[in-house]
Length: 445
Image (cartoon, rainbow, N blue to C red; front, top):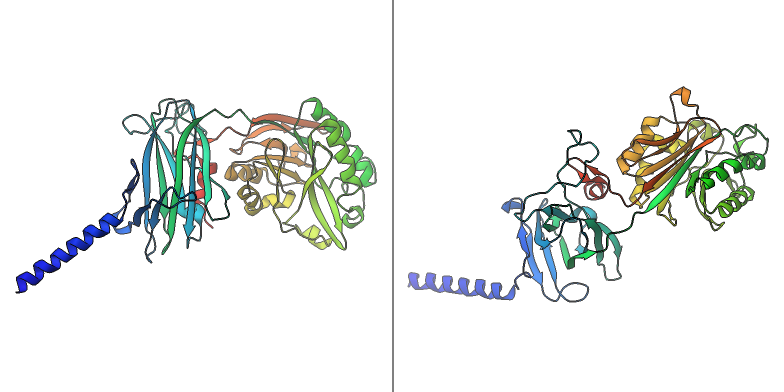
């Protein structure tokens, strides 16, 4: 009797398991699930009616434990030196940080599944001239639609020796959470054209003149010089309407729009370029230290109010700003910060988090190592315009590259420095790859 009961129980259990298996549709061809360790495996499943279009979704789900992690993977064939667009849609539930929990990686491999190398040396390669391994790519989060699905996408040029791209759709660390992936594709596209921009800085102390209007006019020849050299963006120094007037910052403050922005707007339109000017703004009873971006159509593109104030400005009754706006231009996304902001990593990081590719920085004085750090740690181009003489071994008027190196510097008073960069060119670091994309997935909250 006992034996019959056990056999019956086993039969029921087997039947139940088979029925459950029949109710769980298999994943689409080519997709498999992977975990670093079985004890931290999330639950993987496929919903044939999931996704924003009802065409199916790959699901990773955790229980209430911390630290579960795993991913879906599939290999796509590629031809080296051709360009491909990765696209997927992601939806999360009960996830505090989607950018860290729902992560895509793309790994370049040869026909046998081995890693391949990049086509050129990278910055920080340990052996001079050595070609580093092509590290994983990290497609970026884009817009989220009304139903909660976020586009994750990017365009890449496959390394010359690549024969396949392995796509990994990760779930990481969130307890009692769900990540769904849908509409995954990896298709060949035309190689994007370079996105070149000419960045310029002014090295000038406006000593002549006594009024804000006088100070503005002193920059006209320098802006014209930049225009002759086909600059797209030129950065002027901090509080230029205040420098050397003998007046207080409050006395030099004016509304925005106001006389100074009108003057520089006309020059920007005349020369068909962007100008960043450091000014002093009055907004009713408040005074701000600001950087203003004027566009080639003669409009004010936007302004930034200095967030970090030194003691002298606090004592003068200046008000700190609290926002980190980033502005679209004809060549890319521009953020601004002012002088003392550069002593702290938060301002440049907030701007880069919001998509800034170029940061314009009117700066009275600062440690140039911090300028290099702000550019390097965020992989942005940074343009500084300072009143400090180079002989002081302090701040310089320069354009810094994404790696923190000085690309060009204006060393003589009354001169400009200009350089051309390609905003579409990725900076690859040895053992890290495209760190600008990777930091989005790895930086803390």
